[in-house]
Length: 300
Image (cartoon, rainbow, N blue to C red; front, side):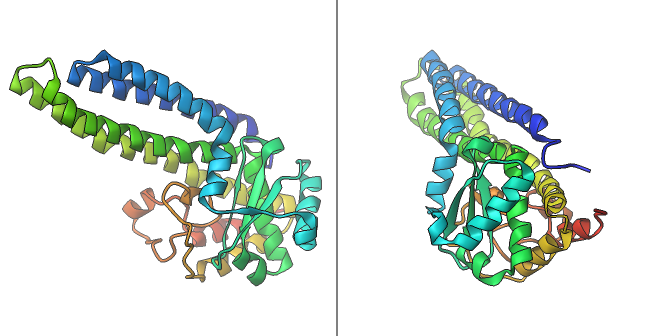
């Protein structure tokens, strides 16, 4: 059974593999575009851009995510009960106290971010605080602390930035190809047509591949964080009850977007969790009923 720490080292390795794949991916896109447009400057730009943005995503992705979701940091005097709950769980888990944020949203939801436990942050919605009882809220907080302890939040925050970068780079490549072909040294129209097709295929497939990478790590980590959080509280039913309440909540999340949706405890796009296997393949979260069932099968 996974605990709060058993997957930490594995997830750190996955983070570097993910960053490394991103670097290679962007460089390959740059090479393909530079070949298609017969311009080495594009390859050089892709290499420099991928290195700089990977460094930036590692150090600042958590700040970007908190800004995108309009999360506001609170102090102990702002909500003493929430602070004590988080402090007690951190002591039990042996984790540093993360920064605590509140989203002024009615939807029941929460997320964790930060590149490591020393720079962790937890954000909860106002609706979550107002509509969950203590044991349910404790289960949710334990789940988010598990993401921090397992370094899942590092994977998630990196994914937010890198997926966006891939989309920007491929959009730039497409625009460059449309304008660059006019001044290209390739005089043969057939070659120009082939080059444009290559660019178009990359522009379509690159964002899809980037999102599939994000989804590949997203669903599994939710099951693991559920189990780890249940082990931390020693009461799986608390999180199970919270998830059931969340599944019945149809309130929209105004700050929800595709780049950050995988960070949340449950999908912020309510009403879209269909049961078809093909649709499930592209979900950022496992179906809540499957998570609740798994929690109630835990023997602690």
